Image 1: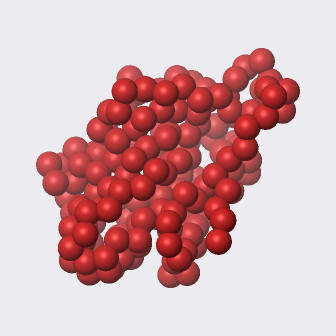
Image 2 (image 1 turned 60 degrees about the vertical axis):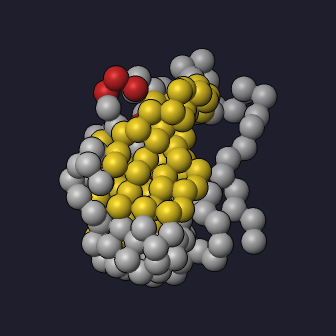
Length: 169
């Protein structure tokens, strides 16, 4: 199984995104109510809104390390844009077993309100998200109609950097 998480081009592709790395910054830790108010229960969705201080009007995707902390049962976590028409993908970003603390690189597409959803399939788990960079729309290649709210779901259908077998739940 191979999951494609992106491509690199020569900078001439219209609406191509550029990457800016950053010092890891925690934006969510459900253990302390940061970004997510509490533990995610079974079949629940939590919304994380990115802090305005780390965004520009061109920011579309956050490069993150997302961690599931000691889930009570085997589960899968899925990340996708919040407040958008995009439905939850069937692929997972993390597949932790009960009691494990597991992290994975996740490219989190931001919805129109600068947030992303985190879905927990089963049991209870805490979630931590650390941002390590951002992808943004370079104005030099942007088409006039391109914009985060209108195009995030149409240009970037699913970004899955999950390990293991994708969930079909």
